[in-house]
Image 1 (cartoon, rainbow, N blue to C red):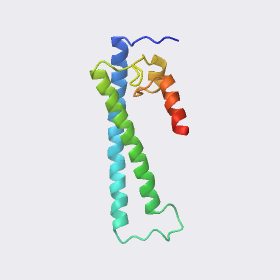
Image 2: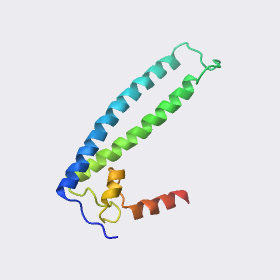
Image 3: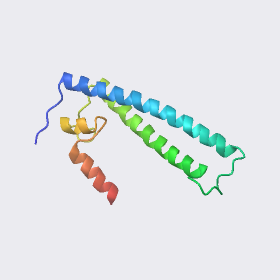
Image 4: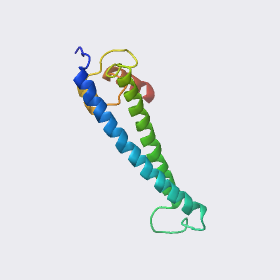
Length: 128
């Protein structure tokens, strides 16, 4: 199937969604940073939770929160790159092949950089 470039209205639609997603992610990252600070303070204190049979340890909580924080930071970076492509009039085109990315794919993953064919190729390479 041949994909066509997005209309100006389409790009505005996706830009608005990306900006909304960015605001939500920044708020979530701020919240997670606060939680990480709380765990860091507890770990640096005299609290000994390693022998507590109830619930996760502070180390486990730190690992979980820092993993989620890292994942959200990566999502934010992808959104920022997508917004840069909007500003440069290259949004909606595969950064690998230059072909148009389908609207359905952009609806599912507005910050995607790749057409479905490239995404599949890259995923297959990662699995090797």
